[in-house]
Length: 130
Image 1 (cartoon, one colour):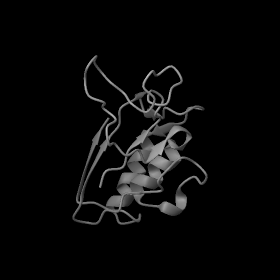
Image 2 (cartoon, one colour):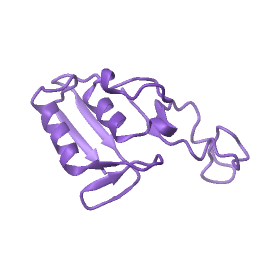
Image 3 (spheres, rainbow, N blue to C red):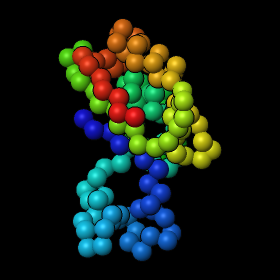
């Protein structure tokens, strides 16, 4: 199961000469080809990040651009979280405006809660690439 959260600000930008497509080199492939984005634009929030991570559909922000998909993992599953963005000591910044943050203490509490079985999703192992 792969869930993608991205602002989609390149593919949908008014100055993109190829709407809905992104190329990282002249003559290269469309890197958006057949990629499903589950959460984009204003749906890329810390609240939705935590709801997706913990498998809590009922905690998703309503009325935003999203598939409403969340991680459905069990005690034998492995989870990879890859975060490309920016932040500083103790937090990761979400890319949507107005900016909100994923604080280290909140992320730690969420992962510990999942490990203890206190969320809809749990896991055997988790790798966070930040």
